[in-house]
Every structure is written in structure tokens, then in C-alpha cells.
Length: 306
Image (tube, rainbow, N blue to C red; front, side):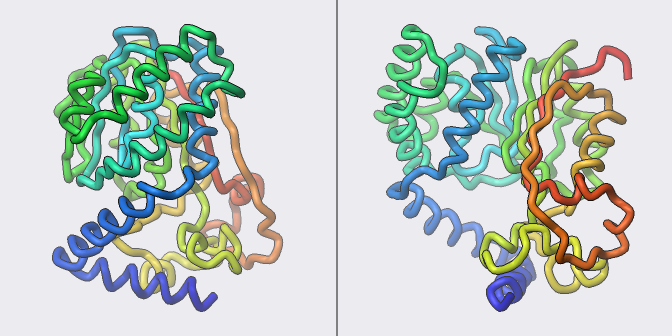
């Protein structure tokens, strides 16, 4: 619990003003890029590729020539980048600030290449296409070269607003580990906007980390420890601006997408035991199944009539 509290205090300090938030981001990018440029790729990165390929084969989510948008592309642009290995799509990479890490991106793509030969269900043609493009990606020396190679557009909009994009202009909206960081009060508008910019019959594919992110720094506590904090206590002690999480639970996410014009096509969830936690008032009346969820993966389709 000591690491948990220490981390919470440190993130509060980094959230104290514009200078400290900027410092946090500069330090994070420098240290993070150095680490990701040499480390072994975490297993959930290739898992996300496998999932997207499976969804594509089962539901034909995108076709060559389609335009997609990835929300919160972060360090690596992973969702759009890896989908582009197999399909000739155009992508808008949308984020609220620039934390791109080319070294980490190339290192992870380099490690992905030999993995594609087994367990991804690729045809010989798909494998050759992916490996050929990976070879070209590994040669680039800047993000501008990468975007020219892939046909991508990088957009930074600090407000997080999607209003610059036209109605019915994308076939797919995708995100990985992003929506849990959006302010709770802004989620209805964001969700409605993603529906607006999707074409009729378009798809939204999201992976949402509903675990307590402070637990990532202290594995001795429950992955859902935040369920025990009241709103007041959480905001006073733990909530911060540099690693904000909205504490939205599975049932709340499903209700949000349904209310904003999406039909749930597929759901995957990971869960943990929360039996030892004393639940705060906000969570005490929620279904246990929802509260146990630590990762929520959703494939949704734009409803023709809201």
C-alpha cells in the first residue's frame, strides 16, 4: 500500500500546474521511449493484433480503401498501424497531446514480424504483405516519413473534440486503453460524436482498462482497490490530471454506448475477485459481475436509428 500512496502523491504533484504537467510529459516521453526502444514487447500488444484480425475475418469491419480513426494513439499508434499491415486503409491518428515514440514503435513492430508466422491465421499473401510493409516501416527515420509511407494523418486537438471531422466520414473508430482516461462528464458527447462521424453500418472497437491504474505501481493491492474510495476521498487523495481515470464500470460503459446509438456485437471481459473490498457508496448497488471487470473489450456497430 505504501507504493500505491506514494505514487498517488507523486502524480498529484505532477498535476499541480502547467509547468509540472509539461515536465511529467517530457520525462515520460524521454524515459518511456528509451525503455520501449529496447524492452521485450508486452504480450497484450500481439494479443490486440490477433483480436482485430479475428474481428475482421468474422465481421468484415474494414475493406481496402476505407478510412479509420484511432483515438488516443499515444506512443505507438498500435491499433491503426497494425491494421494497416494487412489492409490498404487510410487512418487519422487523433490525440490530445503529442507523446509519440518512434524508437518504441519500431522495436515493437520488429518483434511482431516473426510472430506473424504462427497463431495469427494469416494467408501466405497476407503474411508477405505485412512483412514487406514492416521492412519499410523499420527504415523510416521520422514520423513524417512513416505517415507518408502508410497514408496516415496525425491530429492533435487538446480539447479532445471531434467536431472538425465530417458526418459519416469513417468506417471504423478504434481505441486501446484510452476511454478510461476521458473525463466522465465528457463521455456522452464523445460517444455521440464517434457515432456521428461513422458511416452507416460503421464500427467502433474499444479496449477499456477498468482496473485501478495505481495498482500498476503496487501489485500488493487489489486491481480494483479504487472501488473502496468514496468520490470525495478519491478526488482528494488519488485523482490526478496526468493519469486521470474515470472509474467507469462495465455496466456504465454498456449503457453509455447503447444510449448513444451503438449495438453491442461482441464483448470480452477479464475479471478479478473483489470479495475482500468494502465498496464505496457509488459502487455498492452495482452488479458484482460489472465491478469484477478489469479489462472490457467491445465491438459495436452504429445503429441506423438512435
